[in-house]
Length: 111
View 1 (tube, one colour):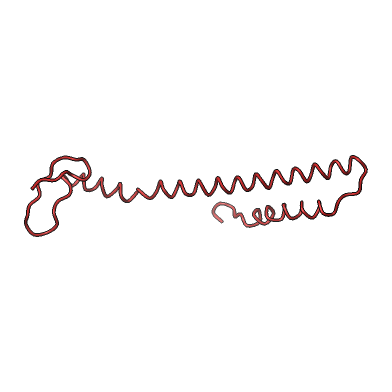
View 2: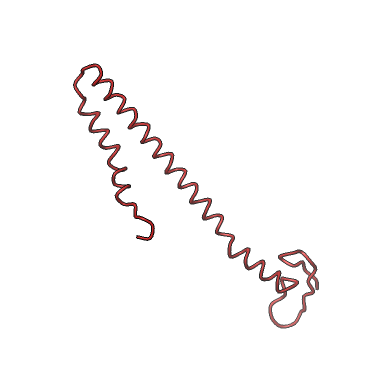
């Protein structure tokens, strides 16, 4: 009986004897197939990590835009001689609090 090598596609002669039927034409094909299976998840993990990082970046950009809007609003109030709105200050503090916490939780390389 003949089958194709699962790695390169060459014809493999399969004995009907005892043991597992052969899947590969050579040991090198078996090794390359093992390496491919072993590293197959590496790219998928990288893609998932990139998607998560892109999502995190988008969230940070949204927070940064909101902080810029609040600072502009405070600047206009000060320039016009109006009293500073405590609600705007509170929201600004709320937007900056997670950023300060993130900065504190980052560790130096090797530490």
